Amino acid sequence: MPCYKQYNSERKHTGFICGRLGEHCRECGDVADYLCDFPVGNGKTCDRPLCGHHATEIGPGLHYCPTHHAEWSKFRNDGGVKLELQNVLPYKVG
Ligand SMILES: [Zn+2]
Ligand SMILES: [Zn+2]
Image (cartoon, protein in one colour):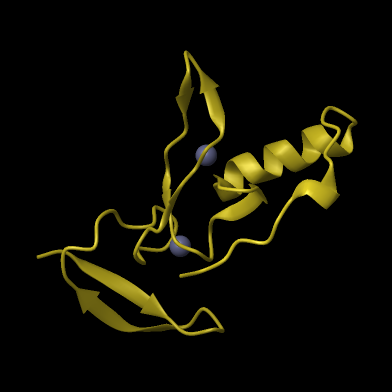
């Protein structure tokens, strides 16, 4: 049975939980609730498993890993993406 690292709100490692909870976050070993949706060509996405802390929401249902979020932020800041921020809804947990 796989075990996952657990962190508190200060990102201190507090222990483990074990169970069939799917993928591990590739950044920290916590339970991965998200996959990176960054397009990598050929209709594929990065698909890096990420926990809620390491997945950055860039749009409704769209999450990027830290590496791709940094790339995307740079691209956007350079004027590459015109984002309609008012259309981005907050993600609802549960
Ligand atoms: Zn993580
Ligand atoms: Zn990624």
